[in-house]
Image (cartoon, rainbow, N blue to C red; front, side, top):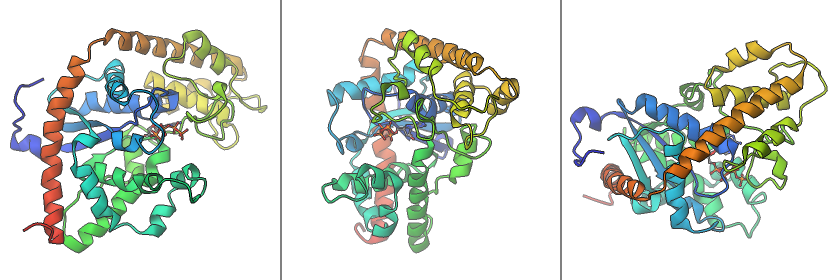
Length: 354
Ligand code: AQP
């Protein structure tokens, strides 16, 4: 890491790729393949010509009950990117959302740009609030606006997230566009979701959605009560392999990529592609027409359990917290600099500052 935080003009104007992953100790294969691995690969590929912002959305995490020690979880969640293979350089910025107050300030301003209608249409709000139940906390409703602020403060163009967050990305684009229409080019619009997906290697333009192993119609989700539906990042190789071998498939009897009619089999093909970093088409060509589902399951079981075992042993080796604290210190100076400059521009547009 450089001791100086002075950037050249070229570096100041480089594009930003940004992601945040909510802190919890129950991360699963959906988080890993939907966001951690793609972000790590993109960061390693682009950190010479892009700023890579990896932040901990600690303000998002207080929406629900805090799971364990928040400070401990913050450090551990950043270590996960290092264990996934992230190579640190001066363009990688780690920071905590609550250490950059501009996130909260811009959220309030964007609250006055967003409408009740569009915000209440967010699918996650409907699902997580039990369809707008009176007792749901306001944070569940408001968090897509905070997410928009997280993105727009840094002019981020690409925001690797799973497909379930695409609607929130669209909202961020819409809010930026509405503000720009009124005040000029203040915010950079994040790329359209189909382009985001392509940037993440999803050539069909669809986002990544890892399905439940027991009900492949649904996404793999930490709140699913069925333990067999999900593979946790700390899962043992034996248990990982067992869950994949017993994954729900179908009675078609032929391997084909067809998310509609054969979601279980298609999920396994997608997992194999993402984990081995091979194009989905290559994996599909290798397996299409085969009739033995057990062969595909055992291939995927081996790949996933081997990859997770390697990841777990790298994670265990990152024992000291000092590296992460150092990265956070430098990252938060950088993030406050960029975010405060953007916030001031917004405040001036609104007449809140001279
Ligand atoms: N199944 C998934 N496939 C692909 N990407 C996924 N993500 C989550 N599940 C999948 C992506 O991980 C990032 C963090 O998501 P989040 O903040 O929604 O995570 P969460 O709420 O802690 O996890 P769950 O499992 O989604 O929780 P519940 O059960 O509460 O709904 C995002 O980029 C997300 O797309």
